[in-house]
Image (cartoon, rainbow, N blue to C red; front, side, top):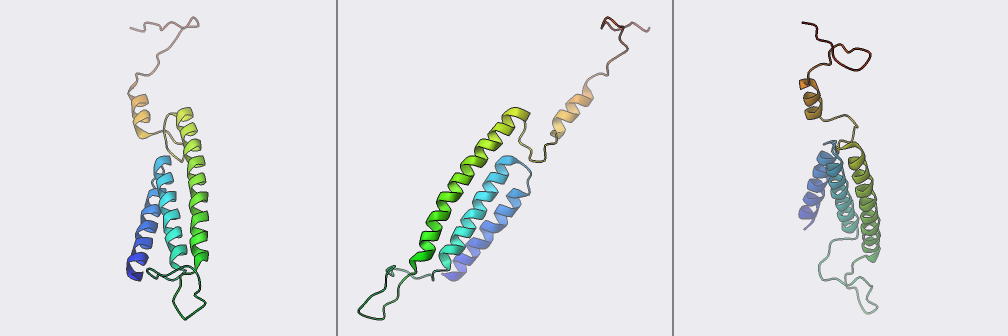
Length: 135
């Protein structure tokens, strides 16, 4: 069971870091969500991985139990990560509507730069705004 949980934590962390480095706001949000899931699994696994064990101590014996503190921490972390994700979605949506693209670094996408390069250069203009015929 431990190898499955540790592999899941590693895969979620690797996927989260990869998506954060994509420099797109939607990918960054997904990456942060995957990282928060990895942290939640790590916190959950710190309370010993036992199956069908009660979260309380038994007063009549030496029965195994699951520590309830990591479960409470994970529930709190889930709520906090949900709120954080909602705020990030709203911020990235506002940035997308304002700039017209979802790049995190603020640079224009390459396609827009190429479209601007294809436009003919502006010719000499007179003071009235009309173009002169040079031929």
